[in-house]
Length: 157
Image 1 (cartoon, rainbow, N blue to C red):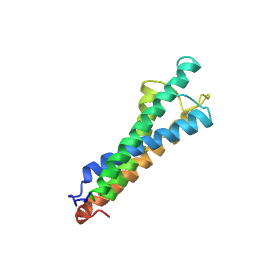
Image 2 (cartoon, rainbow, N blue to C red):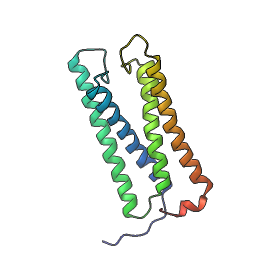
Image 3 (cartoon, one colour):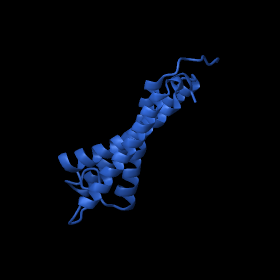
Image 4 (cartoon, one colour):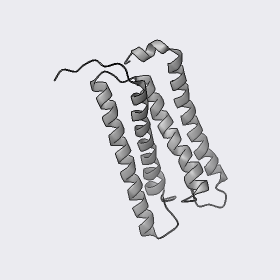
């Protein structure tokens, strides 16, 4: 089958990589904090069985995000339509977005779990959310740095 050269697709490049970033950060969270360190589960307000089930559902969602994101980026690459800088921006924005959503919404608004069950969780919250902001800043820098070089939109490099 002959691969056609398509117009670079910065939007699809961004969103495919956002899915990968979300999936990677969800995997880091569940593997390190839920399983290795055993600091918390996705849903800690019930029995251990429910907590483990909630972790399994989160693992399933992260795998779906990873597979979908990779399929999107592979299709773009096959068609020579991927914009790599947009993909990198999306990757960091996805990671930071997941981290910040987890730190603010899951931890503080919905109170599904805390990062760690200790007397003073504030240092953990600060590190968690600052990490999210750093990842978002990296993604934003890559995104807008790319925008300054509009000629890069016509490149798949």
